[in-house]
Length: 254
Image (cartoon, rainbow, N blue to C red; front, side):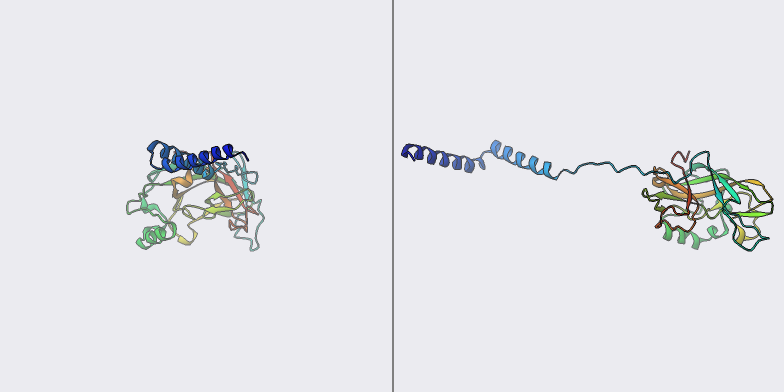
């Protein structure tokens, strides 16, 4: 190598090293270097915001449809078929206070006890107070639907079976939310507490059922809220196998 060229490269190397060393003492240079390094690090660590895929709801029932259900027939001991009756699409009314002149005294007998309030708080993480008021972030949901019998015999329908849930995926797995059974039902005569959830139907009669639930506002606003009418043999972990549920994302209405 030419000696003069070697000397030039040596001086250049010394100059670069000196500049790098001095940069630490120069505020503007140090700031630029730190800013550049931070930007590169931020760019490397920034996540890709990919929206979660929408859940398909092809296995659900929708507005205008009815769900076939089995009814209890006292005159028959064996289990019935699932087309003995049907449940119509529900109307859901949401309120932060007890609706339609319902009072806490109208709740199912177990809900009147202080121990039941404590148990509800422990199991669900919330409960109503002595006046029936719910904590902030929770609401009542009054659910009204019709039950039609197709049987020429007296039957009964269990209004305690349906409940709210959140659909988790396209396989139909769901998570139950809110009170697992209604706190109140219409047309209760107050006689036999063991039959609180049962509605009697005359042969081929159609009746209107109104039941009251409580759940969080977050669940009520969830785009994957469903109303499970017939749990079949599913538990939520098995998916919607033999489970029948309404897509109620167009509700509830205040």
